[in-house]
Image (cartoon, rainbow, N blue to C red; front, top):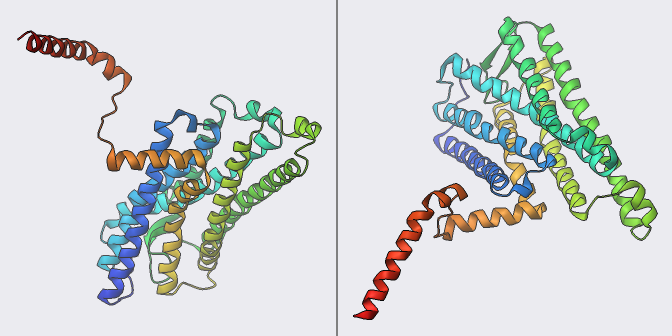
Length: 343
């Protein structure tokens, strides 16, 4: 494992402060998304299942990958040993690829919800949406975990030429190029093509909806049962995908250059790419806070409760369990007041 190129104390403080700020925003922002969905059952829709999955993956990144990178920058080297390096490296790859495919699933979900609503329940009804998500994540875990298990590759920390994170390195150039082609085709190209085609079709349907709002014949044929809120959700998800893609294009370009052997990153480039990867984990809650009214309202209630809520909210079970004691307390208080009046 290589050491991080030496920097001044001020530079290290600035680098770590920025990374910790991104880490905090990513954790608390995505925690709000999960908490809002837990509190409000109306937010637990099929589409939001994928949004929650993205939030969970970002929380894992904030809890596992970012703190370890911050510690490595502070120390100037990797101090946690090969086992922790393997854990960080696995989650770095797993969370990136899982997020890409989860966004592709979200785009497919929106396509059938807006363009082919008659087939939506057949494909995404019941537990099928969750099954699709589980299969995608299992496939990603298998692809990331198989090479090191078979001994073809290992996770290593090489900040001088790559990211300030443990990533997967193969023992041969053929392995590097093969893995690069698999990742680019399976996760980058396929995901981006699916998202682009799906949202182009959705965009056309929404445009026709806006242009022919008065023509109920078209609405009955193409947008039956689709509310204005569904269209807003789709636009929000499109913004999320667009922001995510803009962040990942330079990172995947840099990774392709490194794995193909055409070049390496400078220390500033390594730090910049590391920041970009971390920033993608903080995008999700901001997009939902500003674009999705249902989530925005729930966020406000949660934050208001954190700052000014004085009453404890009891679960129904707890209220039912304590009801006899509450009634007894009220009866004793009433008897005490009556006694005072008699005196």
